[in-house]
Length: 320
Image (cartoon, rainbow, N blue to C red; front, side):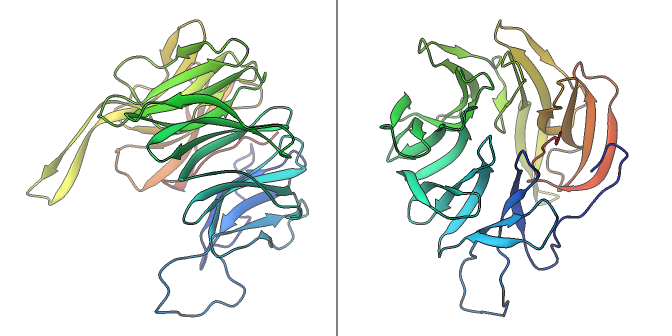
């Protein structure tokens, strides 16, 4: 969507599901899709193949650049656009990196589950949140296997680390801790030079999607559930969700601000490139299936709706 409100459809989704789109610095688009060259009905099929496709800057037809019998998900360009990292999901998960045209594929890490990963600003390393057996943590690997992996963070068996996001200045990694005992999901930051760890999110919030760093690496933007609970309505025969998902901004000095106030769903917030505005998804109910794309100023004011038909699992990205 452009600043004037014009919506441009990039792929056709009548038959396919196109997911996890990412854009390079030069305008190429990479995404995961279950599209096939020769679709046909297969009643014995039990799963779908999601492979990686690339659309060139000229808008030409997508071309498949990664394909296997397993699923390839969450493709992300390196900062310079030369490489693409992806999670291949089979019996185990593997983090792979290839050239932007899909050649030179190499495996960087393997785990029972890889929840999330993030390129370092210089494009030389990747931080990933993973689980091996009952242990989870953050692993840092080099993009060409030239350096041994570094175990940046280990969690106890009662916890899962489910997100890892490198700061723009390269000195910090933000991560989400998910306790298995039902306590709140927390947002933390680890300082790479000293190893110091700092809790960012306030008490009693349930942090949801991975956070977004401000360009100066001093603030974190995130969505969290507040006063959340649910019960089963016997009359309506469905779950009823209570509470709200709000958008918060926290700095490294311990200051927090809640930017939204309506008892509704606000999710997937991201900063604009200049840091003055925020884009997010909105719906009046927590269990809504259709959301709208909205923007607001960084202080929470001047809210505007741009597009009213967004699926629940969408993500957002500002393009310069």
